[in-house]
Image (cartoon, rainbow, N blue to C red):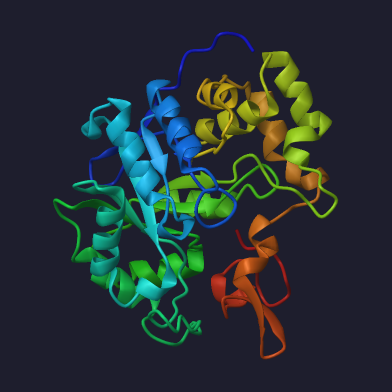
Length: 328
């Protein structure tokens, strides 16, 4: 790869704060980390390489590692944006969820605190999934979140929300979410949802910007000739092509990697031409669309004879209409 500079681009949030365009994700593929020291070294390396955004979540089981890495990095805390998320069993009490993240990370404050999904469960230890009509609803949870904004929680936002769920939230909200973290990649580009969020002053942060494995084990966003051809012309990886495409759309990205060379590479973006952007924008028209969330088996189960994601259908989420047409 040509020696590109580290991307230092930041996006302004609707409350006047800023957030780096490129960050490091910390999801390890399952709860916790097989080797906390390796993950800590990875985060430290990223911070020393120019990353100033770290994304994590209570459900990842690594908040304590994130905190220790930040302290060990030598980078001033005030220079780093920390995003974390709370799970459905805390929807009744986000203030307590915030205290858990503060304790786990050992940090004095969280920069951006997100509702991980709009669905809720009953509190632990039961954690029974609640239907979309059962309380606390995500609107009720958001009202509770608004009360925790302050010295310990600089900003609040949401994750995995659609226009349908955001419409309901914004109708009651006093504080507009600073961002919506969603699945977004070339084969699920979410043009409608991204434009909607922009119109409401909500920044979009993308998870799985590099796509995902289909049942045949192939990630088309990394291997299809459309992407490899653009990568070759810029002397970079296909990963950098997808990350550059998203950031040029005004979307923040949080790629994860345990390989230091890839971490270094992922923050050195390239400038794509209008023609290249258009090719990637239309990729989902010729390469079958793919929604990674449909394949996360750990959060799917049968309810009333239907496959649901924690008790919610795709119509409940606002992902699809009754005929199965994608809405985002």
